[in-house]
Image 1 (cartoon, rainbow, N blue to C red):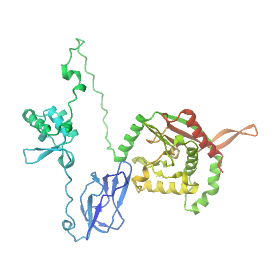
Image 2: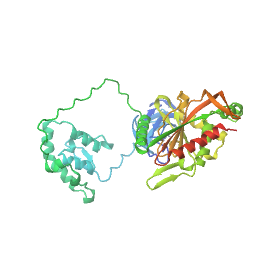
Image 3: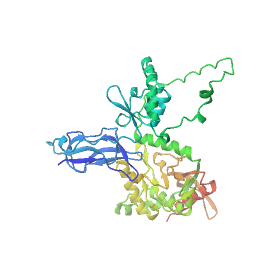
Length: 442
């Protein structure tokens, strides 16, 4: 009996995923729990393992397809089984409600929504001439707008003029509340009253098109596009302000050196990240306004600290796994959790729920040699803490009211915060609390 491979639901709010790569091809052997394919969501790329073993007999989805959770995507079975007898092909998806079907001349039909019908009617477009790229060949709004904006042969224009009225009639069959209005109040004045006479007798010379520098276009992967969209949205959403502090990490370095071996015996690699995390959590408890989000009805204070730790994936981008209830962990617990999330992030083994729900984020850009930076807020959070390179520097220290020159391990901490929620004084007080805890560790 064959094993059905079903698109899993990769999180409570994730209803679909994009198949980025099949790791096995038809006819290849598959072992139980062996990685079978990679699935992308807007948050994470993860591997889906095989729930059975045998031979990959059939693929119902291709690389690049966006598939809903619960959909059959492949079958695994014995090499001599015939896939047609294992399970029938998935039922076609149900037609979208309120869609119309316009018969084509070749015996097929074009499926359109009320919005597409309105656009077709306004531009006298024969929908049956438009190639649909939507689900099941459906003509989408994007298709109709692209068709309207492209030049067409004279024959098609005459046919659209004669059939445009038919599209209007189909649109009029909709109930009144389903027909989009024409929006006369918002139409440009020129469309209602005609274009006004030119004020100047001399026509304006056309602006020369900018010179296009030849180059290679590198297609965007799902993660890069998601990062780009989220970063642009964040800059448009929050007024970003960054404040930078310098911190002496002498006591942290000494504590780590004396406890690193003990942590290894407990199964944890003690890096500097857990120190910054623990100090940040303590400061978030002291200044709860930083552990918040903006809403139109007021500032939402979060009861628990869900700490995001940015992890670089190299050229592919970065991902921010979240330590849920981080305020309940000690240094050892944070070290173990950071190790686990970072390792699984680099091996594409995170679940979407593990990169959601953060209330504050730390990004350690110093690992690549950066001294300080102005990171972008991970919306809808209030702030993000950037940690720079730990570097030995010559500083002036004061002991018993006597100044002296010393060499100390120093680092810059940069907090980028949402100025709608925090002001300079509250943001500086928060970073000062982190600085104080790190400089007095132990």
